[in-house]
Picture 1: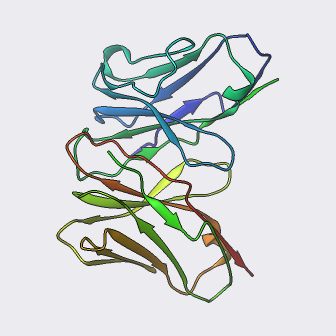
Picture 2 (picture 1 turned 30 degrees about the vertical axis):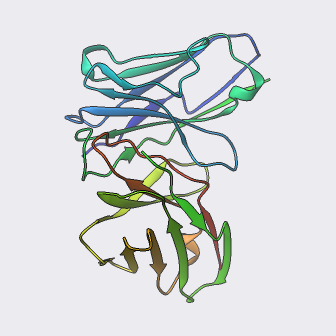
Picture 3 (picture 1 turned 90 degrees about the vertical axis):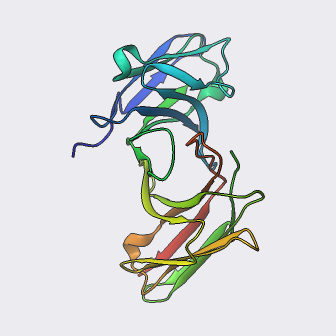
Length: 115
Length: 111
């Protein structure tokens, strides 16, 4: 099966600019996750979707981050305006459903550098 | 949801040696998953062990789970340079399907 697709692969922006990331999960995977991974740390969950509904966005900085998953397939994550501390790799993952016992499939991530 | 704590934080071994990394967690789980992350890439699911299992094998990987001690270990036998990566455990309890990752163990296998 095709993997989780993410784009762009790299992005460099100035602080206070806006940026958007795109994710296309594996076909049929109902659950989609966005993670933020700062260099040297483990991935931190930002938001979890089940189909097109948000299950958990408790760790999403909602003053500047937003995410949507229209039609329960593709998803976009937006940062507006970006701060220096947003420099990180943004990982998208999907799984067959939100409950156990399935593993996640991760995309290769988008590396964001805010200067 | 809970986070696993991996130990050691870093491990350096020679090719051909075995690598063991450990994971501890705090509350009851349904299963525990291990993931690998090569530098600059996404995480790859390695193995899932259910709470009623004590040991599981997959190729050169051996995972054990001790629910009484709330701990798991990942053993990589006959390591190769290509095993150089960060390894994360993710204990999963409840019904949310939400994986929380710790800092991971960084493994370096020297050729």
